[in-house]
Amino acid sequence: MKYGMEITVAVLIIVFAVVFLIQDGAIQATLGDGEEAWGGADGEAAGIIEASGYEPWAEPFWTPPSGEIESLLFALQAAIGAVIIGYVFGYWKGSRKAA
Amino acid sequence: MHIMEGFLPSPWWEIWFLVSLPFIIIGLYQLNKLVQEKRDALPLLAVAGAFVFVLSSLKLPSFNGSCSHPTGTGLGGILFGPCIAAVLGLIVLVFQATLLAHGGITTLGANVFSMGIAGPAVAYLIYKAGTRAGANTYATVFIAAALADLSTYVVTSVQLALAFPGTTGFFGAFSAFAAIFAVTQVPLAIIEGAVIMLVFKYIVQLKPEILTHLNLLSESTVNKLREATA
Image (cartoon, rainbow over all chains, first blue to last red):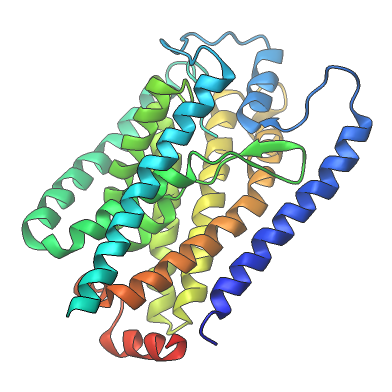
């Protein structure tokens, strides 16, 4: 089948999204006021480590000043990668056609 | 998710720098050779690096209420081996540590080892073993990339457990960290494996001669794969 793999991957991603939505419904119901789920796994690990009395001995020398700026930079990172991937695959496709 | 700035005490952060350093040096040497001898593989190298940029910027929700991100380094590991993948991982980790306060400079050695070396090494070995055994190429790529992603976070858990054995000892600490990192990662690893498998299919369709030139696939396998999806 020509697009068998594309369909399989699409189904996997949809299942992933649906599982997230169901799970999120269950988690939101148990949260108290002001609590937020879906934090980073690194933050949770940091919580365990700090609970043992450890103090990190270095701090990032620059931290994005807000969540918006942080998501800007993450989006920028993804965009840089996506542009390169698109360019190379487009170039290959074009040169194949021309050949 | 990488180990955060300052979260590895001495001597662990120095140890991981020392462990990662030889891989980076060999990687730079191999890159130099690749640039000189196999110039046609450079666009593929760019894709492998760009893939790490995209995938490691996507923080995805997992099923246990926390988020983590895939690594994308499995593709580089399969295509170019763990040393070159280590250099690609290093670039992304420096970007994230300096601009995003994600990961850190002091923990760079440990993070390069987990994401740039251990994961890609797993991918590389599984891919080599799979192709040698004559297994289905795409299934091999899927498993290699998914396990590369997962093993990155198993290694992160080992690194933290070594540094913070706490009162429960190494294994107790490891299971606590693995419960956070590795378990969260399972669904993301599956997605990452699937996406990399798809990218591999497009490489086979558009530029199979690079794969044969890099000795990743034989010409007969390429023809078989291309016929199956034509």
